[in-house]
Length: 96
Image (cartoon, rainbow, N blue to C red):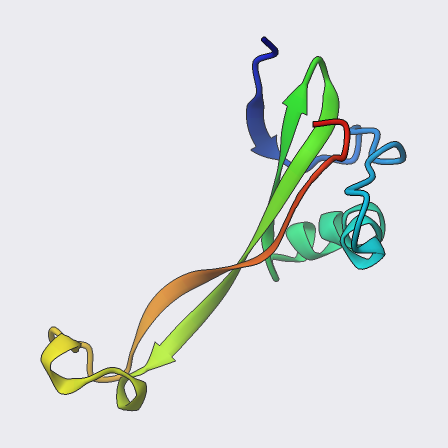
C-alpha cells in the first residue's frame, strides 16, 4: 500500500500528469492557477504526493462570516465576524 503525504504546492512539482478524469476545470486550476493564488495569499493549495507524484489536491480559501449571518446564540462575542476557511477545490487523480 502506498503512503501519501500532503505538502503545500511548490513550483518544482510536476503537475502535468494530474488528471482527475472528470471535471477538466479541476485539472486546469491545479496546473494553471493554484500556485499563483497560493503565492499571492488568495488561497492555500496542498497536494497529496505518492512516490513524488501528485495524486490529489485541496485548496482552502479564507473567508469571514459576518455577524449578521450568525444566529445570536452562536456569536460568542464576535461582533464583526468569524474568520474561517472554505474548501474551494478538491480532486483526486483517476489513478487512485
